[in-house]
Length: 578
Image (tube, rainbow, N blue to C red; front, side):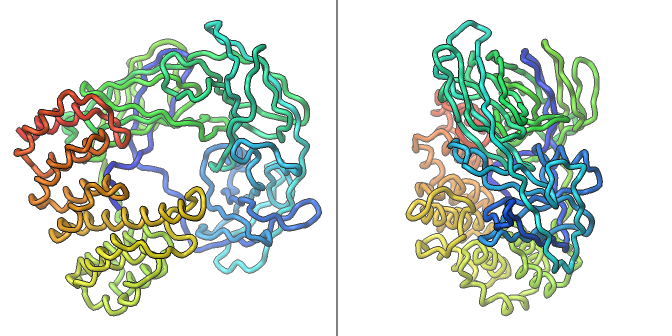
């Protein structure tokens, strides 16, 4: 489904030194994971052959064992994954037929930053090894019936100690020490020690493996001006590790984004650049992303960077964009090229153009009946929605009787997707079903709502309700039915749906929404105001100009989307409306 703010897109990779640099941003399509009909079944056990529940199991291509070793330790996503059940069993599905290296890891080493559990196992590759060169490949099959057994390898934790100083000479007392561990792109960790008055810290028990180590002031943010920190990858082996570390301000960077002469990108307002940590050719970890809005003059700036990053661009408004080429210090590079930057200042320019339309996510050659079968079998509600759109494109209402029973499906996301089909094909039951979801606060079955939402009980229930109602309000925008205006306008002050409502109203395009949106600008929330301004601009609401002029002094930044100020959004909208 389309989102009110464009999704983050793939970008160029840079190695950033502890210096001030200027960087390019490459905007491209996100990497898509392979999907196929094959599966691998198995069980994970410990050294006593007792089943290990809640272990994560990943499947990596077996074509290059050296690459597999990097994938297991780093951020590269696997071809498939699964978690073991109470009996230690797992089932990795959706694989293309072929050979895979299977790796298993027990529960996170530092759960929520806590202490290491009494029993610890290394990341283990099938059948029972920590050396990727000794792993045995497994063939994924469409008729997988035989289980493989992965026996985890036990390891002994060792102390990790360190002495920390700062480049500026400031005291490091109270700095927090964090360890983060990544497993095929899945990871976790947290604060595990605090630096004392002598600049010393100790983590008593750390299992062997690769970690991201951070040392930083309490409650600091990556882009805090003048913040000094340590951020590096360490490898813990089978003996005590002693570190000597120096905290500094890391790297700062500036850059410019430039539209190609033929591009339909006419304003920088709404654009954002995000730096995502990446280890280049070595291990890498999730870390913390740093985001920066693109200024009205197409420039941006980031501070507090250290290491290697993927840079992404996103926009709150159309069109989606892609980089065509990158020029760094006078040298031109193809978009997506990894660029290493030495210490010192660098000049860079990114040339962008509208992104080509993606290939249809669904085979449009399928018959309506075949599409209905695919719709019923689809497990992801977002992919299911793409199938629903393909069904609607066929304009064949004869499929509706075969889907009528799903208008009462217990999963409200699935129910909403079915309702979208009915409403789009003119059946009034569709719009009613979506309206009912907006007012439905009844019981949610276990597992429905936001996967992995923290907590249980009332908090989780409310998160599920919010997710369902937000999804229904989004569907009204996708539907583009003018009758949706009456359902959406009352939700402009609903805390569970308010941020999607302006987008849905602009998708419908009915001018009856203009006056309620102008009134909604009285809400003293910068993020909400920016989304309302975007909607008014899209609706060509010239009558909103006087109210927008009253926002010129609101220099608060939106906390969502591209992080622009209310003033910037208002001025850009007025320029477009005039």
